[in-house]
Image (cartoon, rainbow, N blue to C red):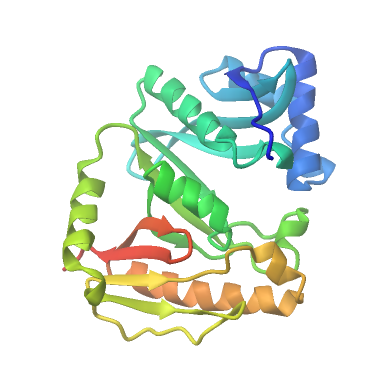
Length: 268
């Protein structure tokens, strides 16, 4: 029987706790020293209107999230969630979701109504958390968001990311799009990328249905074990469908485990 983990969430405050955040970035995310957000930077975020929040079990740091205030191109202020790491043994316990919600609460306390971040769209667990559980949306696909990272999770493939936006108020835009895709019914949905035995189908760029579905592997790390080329094939295929349909006015409004990304045409 799986043991239920216990933990509490609170701001990181001591030198030892900030150093533990450094170690989590190396142990969980696989970053090399030069890509780890160091103690001094984390402390600055924590004391200058940013956020460094930890999940602690019996005083031991088992996860953390960090972020800071940013500005969109139009000058809109937002909270940028930059990094999240949770020990593998604590995943599936709601730690990541709890950290993100605590971060959002802090942003609202600072007077911010929007939180944004990026993530790898090939990671189904992250998609389910960001899009389905938290209710973020995406309208932007970033090709080569970073030139490279030292994390083995990015090895051998372009470092593309989805940019997500989480409205921290009652998000009427999201509610309206959810109603529209629910009303359309599955018969009006078209799968434009299939998961065919851990390999991507040829992208379908011809759909004009109100809703399109993009499938990804349930576990991209398991696909990586089949060879780096297979992951590169998935990056190529997902890049093609995301850039095409987001460019035509579709918006990512949900991710369903076992089904895929749900994109609604909000331009029609």
